[in-house]
Length: 174
Image (cartoon, rainbow, N blue to C red; front, side, top):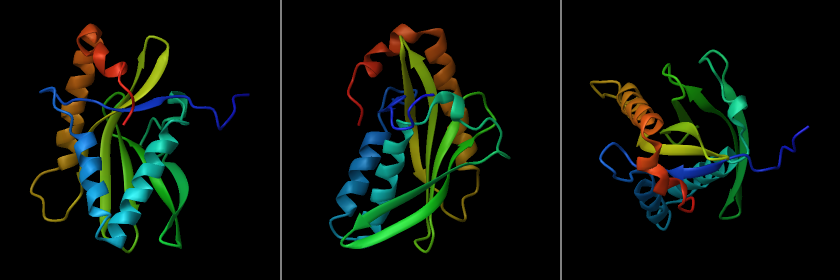
């Protein structure tokens, strides 16, 4: 039996269809916000914990249907305070191999989403995070579906022309 503590995948920031990295700049922006805001510190802490956790999630353990949720419980310590919460962490998005990482923090009115796909390059497994966003009320269209469809096109392009993207699998993770 495989060890639960053994890393199974590398988490990377993957470019959008225009070659632009959106995930790393989003993380940097959140990191800067932590200097001035305790809630931002908690949001960033849970997000980093989730991204770290993803390294230990085997591709075979990803949920295949939305009615089979993938839960994870995290605990972080910020400024001497312990925060603990269970998240419905990973949700499949009704397109082959496209998922969202979900961080809904109770009491903070923060609903983070990170659109990603799993990909095996050479012998290594990667989680390719492309589109980060915060869900907000009063949006006139479904942002999740919009980013899901874009990620699906990127994955299809990657599968057809993997040599075009090989440089992204040689970089260090965020």
